[in-house]
Image (cartoon, rainbow, N blue to C red; front, side, top):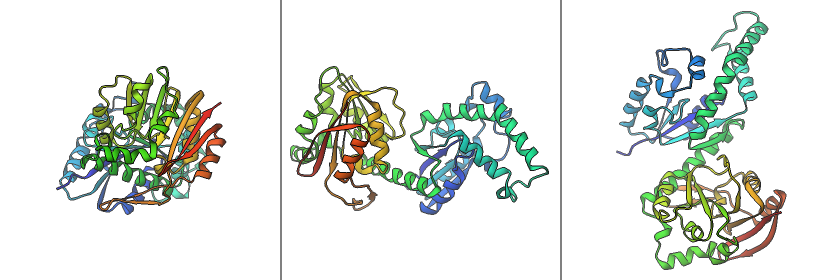
Length: 381
């Protein structure tokens, strides 16, 4: 029996977890949802805010009942187990079972507004009837929020968000967030499955390598103008097919990819290069602490829905004079069919890409075509 895929969705209070869970349960078949709040008993044994102030050691929580619940579900014939669980992989006991940890990111003001709407308006009448003077209750709540809860929420963000697998904008509508989560899940599982099927372009025979070069061959790599002092980022590093050619020509290379199994295979393929670092994550939401002289991407933008944000982020993390080289597929299909699975994609239209590149402040030095791709060479002035 195939093991269910375990997803943990976290976020501060008001991030929309419960609403998202209900939508996802409807849209993902054969799924069981587990709510952290449904576990009975005192899980911490001390004041939550005081625990947070003293270091927020998540392993202090007694979540043995949640662990037993997960264990029991793992023996069922399920496709997914979704955990409404605040700690991602931070608690060792639960983290061992989580395949994919998600964070719903929202500004603190939206969190607070949602809590007030939930607890102090007619929306809350069935769950929490108001006891008396609403203004006084709200005032008391805000006093406590400013004195205690706000700092606790900030610490939660600081200690959980950097270590999740992927981040989504919880300020968007429920349907938008659910769409993005489900699409990212299908992409991740697709590329994980390719590794399970031993589909690794790094080890392709020569005819297949020549075929792949029709998207990003020698002209693509030459457009990067690599030198031994350049720092480089590859968006969608895959198993390292292009990185193999780039590492030996630059000072350092960071590769990011959404699939853990793909990243692990890339580590094996690129182990001879000491100047590479690989990240398992989603480019748009990953927080880079450095800038790059060269950024490149091939056959990855078809998975990016918000292309404007992606290109703007690229421009933001390029050094002055830095280069961005992009290869996009000429085909315009919106669904990739692999027989046993289908992947929704977002085709790249060259005129729109031109507008997004120039709108982000990138100068297009050259646009040329290969048999299967359109390639853009751009410069940040």
